Image 1 (tube, rainbow, N blue to C red):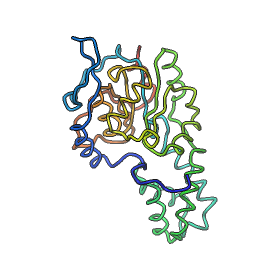
Image 2: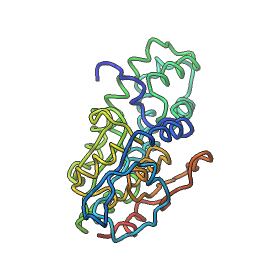
Image 3: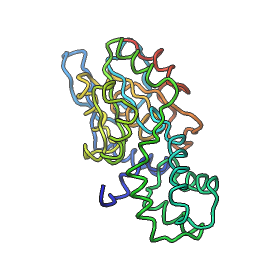
Image 4: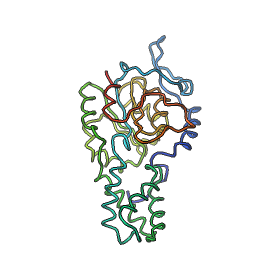
Length: 280
């Protein structure tokens, strides 16, 4: 990661802007659905399928997860990294205490929706640090952040139980390939999931329906037999739903955007609740 990629790889877009972008894509993408008459998979426009579908637990062959703020407790992990970074680079950061640095960084970061190439110069300027040190701090973030990766409670047990039930498992995440791969490795997910799709490597980005369809193919099943679990209402829930998948919104403290369609699937606040939704 020698050079900084475009900001489009920074994580989730703001809900309002990304919903409008998502709505526009419905005119250009299609999703696989099953034709009971012919017995073959056929293509129908996504917008024709974009409506609330009844959740059926007997349809699930695969469970797909977002990474940040779904499997990875990103906020907790980032706080741990920022405390460590402050201790190692305090002389570069200006006149600020560790708790102030961490709190302000999280505000500017906006749950990962603002690229760190923007966050670091801004926070240094605010606290009187040297803005030219932003590149050093950014490189440090990209190299070391994954060392502090922490999962949400129950992640390992839930994934192991789903595998024991014979379900395929996958991860679909936006972000940089190397950065996200390090987090997958740090959480020891490599041996627990069947497929990892990262936006930079795939050349597609959630909520693009094509990325969800590719994930279903990687898990050797139809989108209609997948459950997608994620925290972002637009990129995860509406994107997966438009591709024909059942969905579970892992909402945490986030609120559903008022200008988006209603939540088309289940809502959960702990990963263990996925077990009740995903039975083969």
